[in-house]
Amino acid sequence: MTGKLFYMVTVARFGFPGEPAEPGSPGRVLVALSGEGIVERGIRVRDRLEARLRAAQLDRRLARGESAESSVALALRAARLVRPAARRDLARTVWRVMALAQRPPSVRTAVRVCRPHVRAANQELLDIGERLVASGPVSAYGVARLRALLADGAGPLYQAGSPDHLGALLHQVRAALDVLTPPPTGPGGATS
Image (cartoon, rainbow, N blue to C red):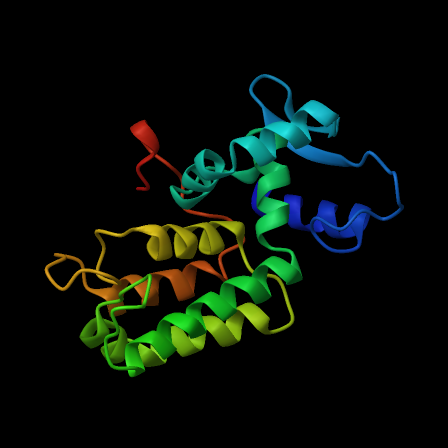
């Protein structure tokens, strides 16, 4: 429920998540506070700074399914992840991964993907790239999960010996892009 509220409020207040309605406008977001319920909070410079400096930590929290309304910094990070420019950049990264898998291995390539895994998951990668550049909202939860998968150097995208199946993980990411409310998190941030 609160994920849908976050999307609706950011669209109403900002025009599109992460895009301020007026230059210089400080903005406001909804946050869920225990004991107070869902309340509107102003965005302070400190909140913006926290969202930038702790981006990786906030991304991990979003990827685990923590609600974007848990804090102002998390709401700001979620809004930044789903901005059209960020989505286009992420889609280009997905397409670069696909291109790397089609080329012969090179000594000069800084990043070496697991070519057999990526080739086998080509359709899932293509679907994710297309979804990212399509119109309509995507969830910060799904974007954060994709960013985590792309950054996991020990995962199936890069390692042939990884126990995880790349196609299955990408299928989960693709489904997560359309989930406005992530699954509830359990103790330690595990999704139930």
